[in-house]
Image 1 (cartoon, rainbow, N blue to C red):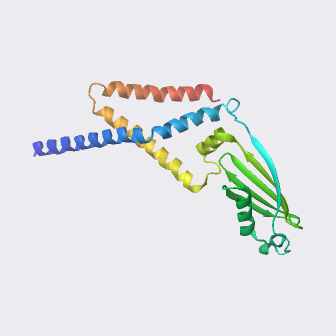
Image 2: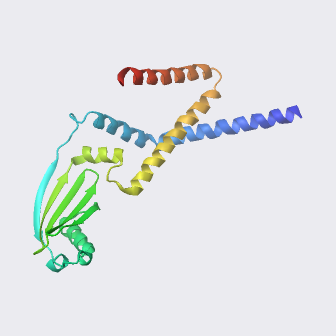
Image 3: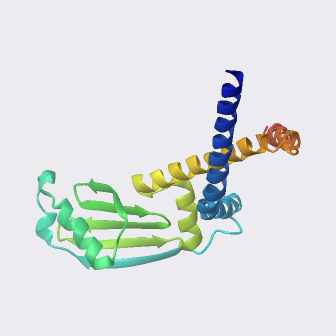
Length: 206
């Protein structure tokens, strides 16, 4: 009976070790780009003075169908037509973050990573001004890192990336437990890392 239990336990440990090794190796390869991206953007976010990038602003003017905005009943304002008109004529691909209707004008705001477009439409005649803001590649990367104006789908990408990195870390910890010669050294180094991180927090954060 003892022999059977020992064999079962040994088989289980081998399976765990094999799965951990597989997950750690291929998870690390898959997450290489993720780790690299969030590491680089961590630096750019932490040093905005050095990596601010160039903000480009521009102003465009135009006129849309006045019938879309002149109705006194705000429920009859042609929101969909207005949004699609602005998208088509100004090559806007960002999502609509706000559509505000006042007595004299409509304001339509589009937001995206490193990008903003705000249209101010005169309700009397349909003329409008569109202000465009582009933050460049660094601004786009920073917004992707923070998940700002990126939508729900990118939020899933961030969550999955975080879970993948957790699995890689945990599988690496499991693997060290199966390397007898390096197990205690590895665990000691991990403990030192935790203590060091805690000390840095206590020292630098008031």
